[in-house]
Each structure stands twice: as structure tokens, then as C-alpha cells.
Length: 190
Image 1: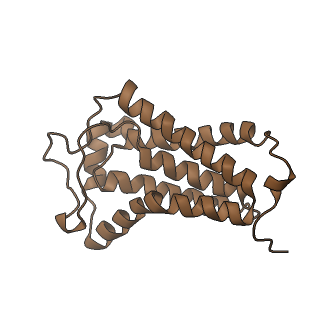
Image 2 (image 1 turned 180 degrees about the vertical axis):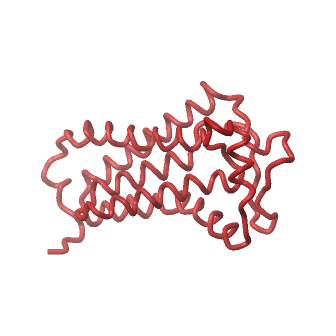
């Protein structure tokens, strides 16, 4: 869509399809990453052990630092869809969401979503759930476009950073030997 319609054209195309149901759905979808992340790290600690929780925290923090540096140092002047542009629909005021106008590239929420759900997929015993986790991450990424907080290229970059950095960091962090204490889950389901 980006190559056919361009950055603003793709945003306008996606922005024209909305409803009060989707306003609520995507508003709360984008909030998942903001509060769900800590809960996931705690659940990993409880059921997988300290090693996996510590590694997940380091991976999550590393992708956040990468995205932050790209936003603030490499692409500090990347405008968001609503910057000086009245063409794009914004979410109704009753949601209390601030429409940001700078530091758009890459999407931090999308990076966080793909990092988080990629980690969950890696640690899950049921590999088939990986598709579901991927779908949740895509919905969260798209919510950023729907809410006019990001362009498609911002969420594609965030998804790429979240996925590939998680896979690379997991490979290296998994090699760290914390000792036997770190491998024991707090809650043993056996």
C-alpha cells in the first residue's frame, strides 16, 4: 500500500474507515502494550523462572532503547500524521488521547508489541499460539495508524525492530548461565 499510495495516501486510505466500535477497540488495543508488558514479565518470572524474566526484561529494554535512539537522535524531525494536517481523522476527544505531532519514526508501541508477543511466542510451549500472538501484535501496530499516531512506515519499522532484535537478543541472552536457581519457576505446574 505504501508503494502504491505513498505515505500520506496510505494513511488517508486507512483513516477513512472508522466507527465508534473501532474507536474503542483500537484505543484499548494500543493501551495493551502500555500496561500489559509488566504483567507479562511478572508471569514469565512466576511460571518460567528468573532467567527468562531477566532476559525478557533486558530484551524489552534493549528494543525500547533502540527505538528511542532512532526517534530522538536519528529521525528527530519525523512528523506524525496530524502534524499541520487537517486531512486525517483523530480519535474523538472523550478518549482523552493526546495527538502527538513529532518523533513518529519508528513506532514505539509497535516495537514494544512485537517484542512482547515475539517473546511470549518463543517461551510458549504451544507453538501454534505464535500465530495468535503475531495477530495481536499486528492489531496493536495497526491501532497506531487508526488513531493517527503513526504512518504505516512507522509501524513497519517498529515491527521489524521488535521482531528481529528480539530474535537476535534472545539468542545471545539465552546463552547466559545464571545458575540453577534462575531456572526454577516460582510456581511449578507439575
